Image (cartoon, rainbow, N blue to C red):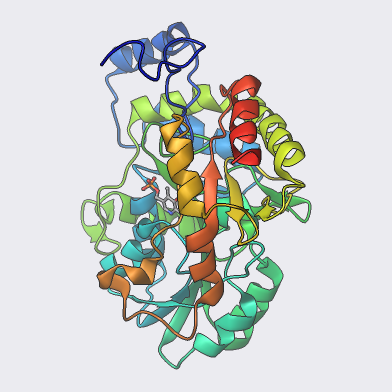
Length: 375
Ligand SMILES: *Cc1c(COP(=O)(O)O)cnc(C)c1O
């Protein structure tokens, strides 16, 4: 390419800005943990770092019991398996594919109902209409870390004798009504994937309320083995290894600072984009983790969401269309629909998640804001 052609005035194009990026501790800080693993030769199977991390997470999150997993998806699968569910589970069409996949892996039928257009979470008013004699559970997602209407969902579950499993993959550290949002429902499932606010490279966890349930979950996480002669059920291998657990202990020391930094970026976006006609910022959450900034691009904005998405990408801003396509728009899930999904469909067509992560410089946030304000 001719270097004179279309060369931006400020020099070479800056590196692309991803939608999220893990913040890493200094490598030197990780070496002593590795040394300890090399010394004791315990690489997995509930080694010392896994035990420490489960306890540290209970304290940090303010929950009773945590079981670590190799991924959020295996944690979801075991959570569903542990509850002995059958038939249908009412869930949201507006999520990452892993939520619905976990249901299929457990032989359960997802039944999608519409979301609330403001919070992007399952609309409790729609759940009841989707309940049939075959329904055994509700699996909502705290979308973008915004707490679901947990009281209304608990009330529906109580009246219809249903279990509630929260996909809390986005909700690490989120507080609601004075405590952890993870304390709601029968089980809550976290993801510690590299793209999430707290990460163990790959990983996840189930939060539960009592030790008996934890023991069952822990057995199912390890092939269902209780002891040499006893199986709890058809378990799988879902254990988090010691390197991941050690990394988690290190990450835990800086996760509050990371969330604090995300909060500053969130506020910057709100200040810059809040008044722009056609744009709607996500609902502000007091105890949120600000891991996502889900901007809704309405019809009054001069460009469609997809045009804005394309334009930002051409400027190296890798904003993402989470969650598009809608789950029932995959042929695999086309039949899982109960009733209209207008709000979910609109969200899938209009929401754009902007870059937000602790190391994102504010000058870049301002550049992104400028590009959006000035189409
Ligand atoms: C990330 C995510 C998962 C899956 O977690 P993994 O750790 O990647 O397996 C499940 N549900 C939602 C909503 C997610 O965002």
